[in-house]
Every structure is written in C-alpha cells, then in structure tokens.
Image 1 (cartoon, rainbow, N blue to C red):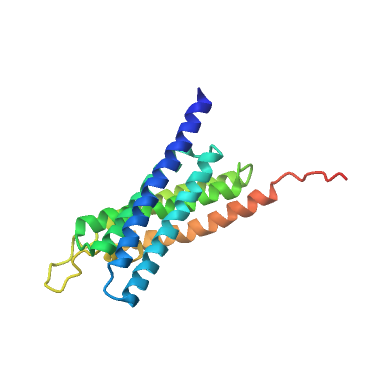
Image 2 (spheres, rainbow, N blue to C red):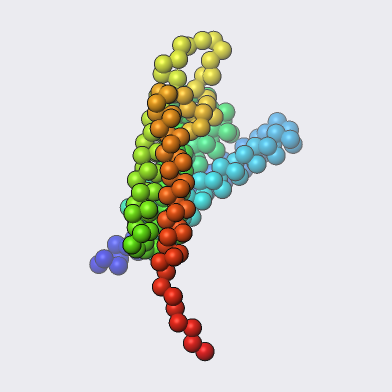
Length: 220
C-alpha cells in the first residue's frame, strides 16, 4: 500500500510536469510564429526557452526527489508552482499581458519555483545528511523558506505604496520579478542577508556531506 502511494505521487508529478510543459510548448510555438518579424520571433523564442529551462530545472529536481522518495510532498508542490510559473510567463509573453494581479501571481509562483530549486537541488546533492552536514542542511532549507516568504511578500506588496501616475509601470509581468520588487527597506536588507546565508549554508552542507561519506574498501 505504501509503495503504491509513493508510485502514485511520482506518476502524479510526471503527469503535471508533462501537462505544463505541453501547454508551454504549444503556446511558445504559437508566440514565435505570431511574432511581427524574424528578429522578434527569435527573441521571443529565446526568452521562452530561457524561462522553460529555468523553471524546468525545478521540475527536474522535484521529479528526481520523487523517484528517490525524498521530500515527496514538497516536490509535488514544487512541480505545481514551477509549472504554473512557466505557463503564466509564456502566456504573458505571447499575449503581452499587462495586468498587475496576473503579474503578481506569476511573480509569486516564480519566487517559490526558484527557492524550491535551491532546496530540492541541495536535497539531491547531500543525499542523507549526517552529523555536521545535517544542521547545515536544515539551516539552508529553513533560510530558503524564509527568503521565499520575504520575496513573495515583496512581490505581492510591490507598488502598493507608490503613487499612481500616467507613466507608472502598470504592474507589468517583468516589474515584479524578485530582484526588482520594491518594498520595505528592512525586508530588502533581511532578504539580502538571507541570500548570503543561504549560499554559505548550501555549499557548506554539500562540503560537509562529502567529508562524512563512508570510505568504501576497494577490492580487486
């Protein structure tokens, strides 16, 4: 029964991944063909491919974790978030959507897709952390979750305190990517500190896990 549930989770993740990738591929293909000229078509295709690869990295890590039965619930949620971000971004490029609410939803999905990539990538890299690697791994995942919450909040509240002008950004899609979010100064400072700590903990956990690997006896 337990094995069947685990298999079902992996199959569900694969199905969500295929569905979101298929949608992005069809919409992206149409967007390239619908471009005004060759240069615009190439730029559109390049941008869409970049977003697919970026969010696809999260999909790949999540699927690998499901296959290894690691962080299965987190992996499923990450597949849904990455797939949503990918489809919303590709659809926005094709239809040139300039809606603040749409942009914030896409931005939040992209934020969690990125931090899921960081957390799941580390999960795959360290395997089963032991001793000194375990607190570093747990610290990295906690900081990643905290940074995700701060980034998502900054995206959601972006522009809320800004005066509305005729020349405003209009809440376009690329105005709410994580690095461009404008929010509370203290939160921005905290996010910067969290990213530095996250990077150090990520690679520290990876190094510690390698030091703690058991040495196998080589026999000939």
